[in-house]
Length: 181
Image (cartoon, rainbow, N blue to C red):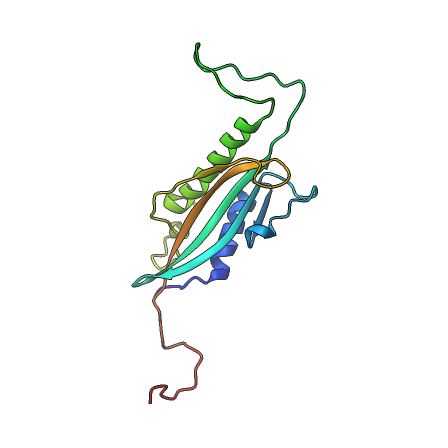
């Protein structure tokens, strides 16, 4: 028997991932315009923007836009990072932007890894019918800098969370009458 997962189950799983990840300080869900950019928000932030749900023969594919971002700080006494090799130039500014991008990218890869092949998956319960969340795609992660009004920098990517669904019609809450004429 398949234990169908609901939208609420998937959202709670993503929120739980954000709470348990040591880098992420705040996890939010909703439209991109719902991101709280106030000074009270603890960063780094993971924001989950639901985009669509598609069906397969025996699965639901929940599609999300995932933002992982942090604030860039600028300090007058920071020194530019020297180029990695002589005779090259870089356009490093006096901020921690490169470090923020690196940390946020690592966190994005962690999120994808957890859904691909993680020890946190429910299948470790040794119950062959346990619900499992997974992902199958290859991903394009896109950097952004100063996307919002407060020097927020990070990465955004599309995450598809795949869950089993048996599309059982016996338990639909309907009056037991024919609907066809």
